[in-house]
Length: 160
Picture 1 (spheres, rainbow, N blue to C red):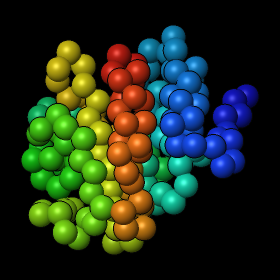
Picture 2: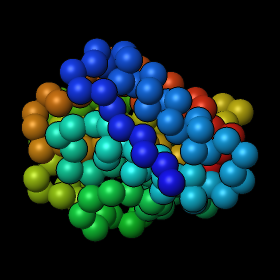
Picture 3: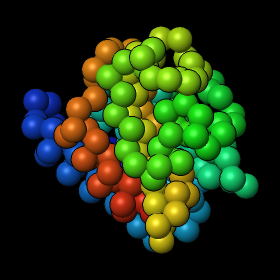
Picture 4: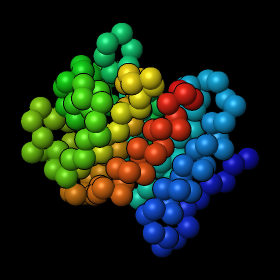
């Protein structure tokens, strides 16, 4: 049994170090990408407060397709370049959005979402998935969150 938990009150950098270490431990040696994404989605929900959705969209046939997640049912397919996830997939760059209602072309899978962080997972320079975090709070995510999820994406690149 695994029992990974964040330490109350720890600095964000330490929290993300612990999250990445837990993800590394859970995914090391496991070749099934879906299983790895499912466990990491659970870790994201356990470690990060104030989320209403945490999970993955996988690049399949030139579009993003829903992968393992924690939260309400979500959009199944997202075109590259559409919405925050599609923008991350098209650019290969992290999208940190303090107010999703101000993001042109935002796709509202959950009307409760107010801010979003989407980090592409790159393998050999190509986007293979995105990690998507939504929050019901405006400006929930900052540069420390982006850096932490980027570190997570880097270790997952060959594990999903």
